[in-house]
Length: 280
Image (cartoon, rainbow, N blue to C red; front, side, top):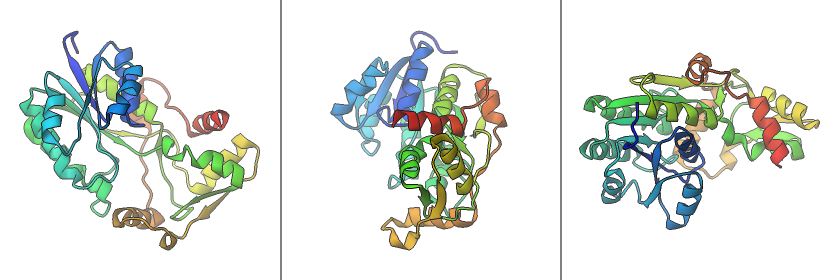
């Protein structure tokens, strides 16, 4: 259980994912310190309720140590496809322990053992580093985020096509990161999720045809699933490897853990689609 003197560091507090953790912590009475990369991001993080905001960079260990000073708990998430992700994460763990942090909640990824996917495999060494310290931890293993579809949903309703650079038949579980943020805040401040490795997924393992049908139902327009030829895209090698994997194997998980951790039914993809279309 957290006390009034505990401070929680949220790494990436200005980002679209970690930024959702800040208000969840504040709602529970936590004192939140946000770590951001740029000075012009500080006010946005303060508006989410952060008690204080520090500017730093995960590749600058002096700034990381400054951010960790006086913190008892930390939420850690790495920027997507950041170079040297494993080394940066392990350094953060070392600095956190040396700074007196007692608990880390790590927003990792579903199936970090997938060695061919750099954005998955880079998280396994960070988990190992945490395990080797004996520090209190919770590992969050979310599937694909609903928020990754934020731009695609209105575009699909407008154009009539939902396109991605892998097979339309591959099935994926997805999750609303707002639900992940709620679990993260709970894990940071309470003890019942300690030592847990939590696969976090909303109900449903849908292929692109089925997602297109949901968008069609919500928008009242015909939407078809199509495939972009990945050879026409100028993307780095790690993303191409991800496309290749998704072409034949998706990422699926049970919704049971998320449902239990939340104590309620997770947000649904259809509700997210309705919400996104309403906002556009």
